[in-house]
Length: 163
Image (tube, rainbow, N blue to C red; front, side, top):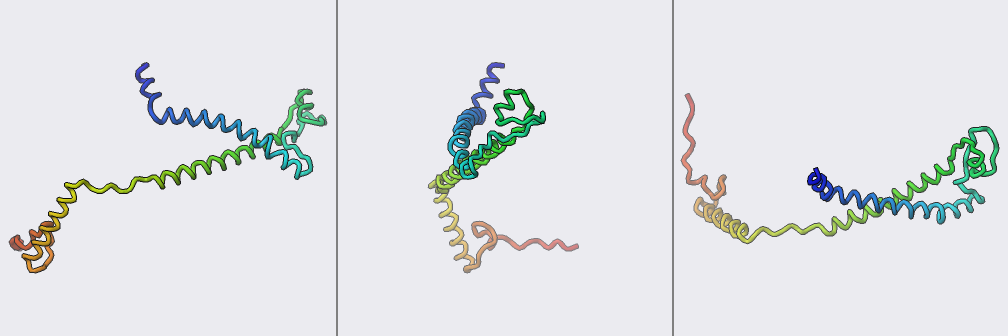
């Protein structure tokens, strides 16, 4: 069982997936900070000092000055401001990932291998084939043959198969 697990874990896709998840988790922390600390303050300032993270609706019917006060009082709340921040995070993460994938795809296209030239033996065989065809065409009066190598001129006509 250990050997099977070792074989499974050492496959390329599993390792790449694990690395992707770890990098994604680290990237999420960066994006959360970008949204909370860099993007939302100017957006809130432009909109008149609005802080989306404090937008909530109290389901208990009481009025609270802030989300922290409602949470401290134990009130049930719908925190739609946090949802707005999560949506902005999602848009930024998906946009950043799109840009990264787009650049990686461009690099793959640029680094695509040029078509490999056939081996020398194949080139020689093609030259011999072409020379034989040309020779067969010369012998048949310049009429191209229907068979490779010009064998049509040397073949007898088909037998009559009528009843």
